[in-house]
Length: 175
Image (cartoon, rainbow, N blue to C red; front, side, top):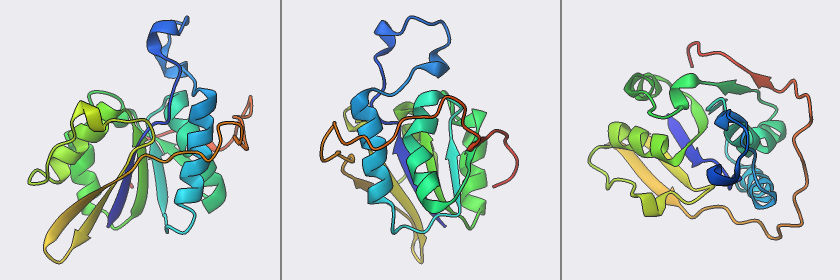
């Protein structure tokens, strides 16, 4: 089992978002560029499943990855704050090579449950598009934090979310 946990790419600040539904808050231009860079960073990584919180910013962060890997996004409400300890247990039972995208606070909570002996993730570590890899090894779980993906150029976005995308598949279900 290998899990790649990703905090969503840079999104429009919540204090400037005018709509009541925060789940629709989009990525910034830099965030779209980070999503493209994330897909490049993970292009050689084998993935079986991609899970995302059902928010525009999380879905848009992993959409380029799913397109590159020919996978669908499975949205999970238990990836919304406050997150779910049950999800962490479910992940430990699986044999998947999974990518998960959520808010930094949920990633922090998942890491605390998955690898309690590892140092915790502090708010300073919750940089947009940060990646943590959790791997099952012979001596237990190992957590590695990677630097946040940085686009080569903000102008090199490479994609924008289609107005109507059939890529996102909702639902919980088993992993």
